[in-house]
Image 1 (tube, one colour):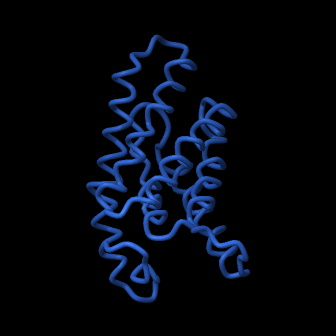
Image 2 (cartoon, helix red, strand yellow):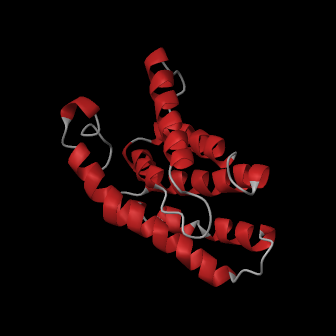
Length: 163
């Protein structure tokens, strides 16, 4: 459940996460059919705490300003992230939660198909995005977050789910 009364500490934490997502996305190759966005590892924060849905969605929107598809990617890329993050926060198993961004990557596949200047095969592009999401989030992100959840100072060990 998302907190209604946010403290200054919560707002700062959310701003830092949004900024981290945006900076990681904009500084590393992260646009196109093979995205491999390392920033997507941060989406697992929504699994641990639904508070992170909005900061990560905002971080995605900010980073998508730099996308070749501009405002369309800001809207639809952020929508795909928001839907995936919302589902992740409601999923009880971290491995199942890690699959949601791949599931909603069809939105990005449609976006690329409709906006590309070259002919694009929707299934190929969507499959490539799904693969990149699974590699980054499930294969890399889950072990990283499970490790980080053991570090008490980060507070991920005080979660609603069992990692």
